[in-house]
Length: 260
Ligand SMILES: C[S@@+](CC[C@H](N)C(=O)[O-])C[C@H]1O[C@@H](n2cnc3c(N)ncnc32)[C@H](O)[C@@H]1O
Image 1 (cartoon, rainbow, N blue to C red):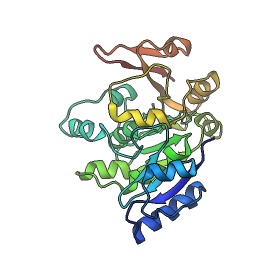
Image 2 (cartoon, protein in one colour):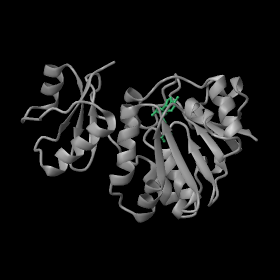
Image 3 (cartoon, rainbow, N blue to C red):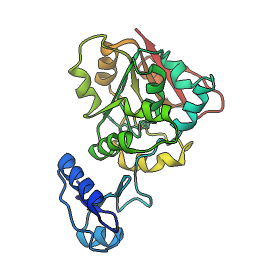
Image 4 (cartoon, rainbow, N blue to C red):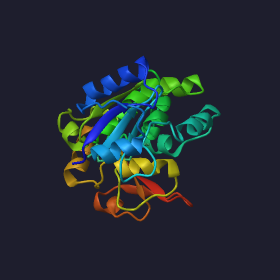
């Protein structure tokens, strides 16, 4: 496994030092002083990847990546604006989300879908995101509470999401039957979905691998209303696990659901 070190932004101050320390406590990686060195220089001389604690966000640099990975709400902002105008959202429709519902996101990533779900279920609902990769879980969890969005509804939706670092099938086995209205699955399938370029760094840092029998059967057991999957329209997953695939013309990814 690749070694990861933590450092501060180029001009360290009390804020970035504190944030570097918080990352060390959460992730257990060593810290190194920035000492005016570039990210590239630090990565090459220490033969490591680098988590940089900036004033406003954490950035994960990997030697194999041209762009760093960091939290941003991505398309959630305009999807929320559309919902605020009374328009619909495919995820909300597919999950039949209503205020007060609970939504368990088994593949949190940047939490874009979870933010939309959190807005839809409102303050009386509940959203939890499970993320298997420790760095993604940390960066998304801190981003959800620290990112300063331009409008309050987005901020509220982000702050209501709780994040758990765990592999979803393992997390699901610890839950009782019928405890979450919707269980949502959006793993990194083999087919690349090139609809969002802002998604590219997540594809490079996140955990890959499709669904398993155990994962889907645990999701079915835990869901009260439905299990929803998102996958490339060609993906065999719909048929393999018995999801009803909903065809969305002109989109590369489709949703599928299993009703309880
Ligand atoms: C396609 S992305 C999800 C994107 C997410 N729906 C969003 O809106 O940002 C898949 C994410 O699931 C994570 N993942 C993959 N396998 C997992 C597992 N077994 N348990 C939990 N998370 C997993 C990956 O690390 C990645 O962050």
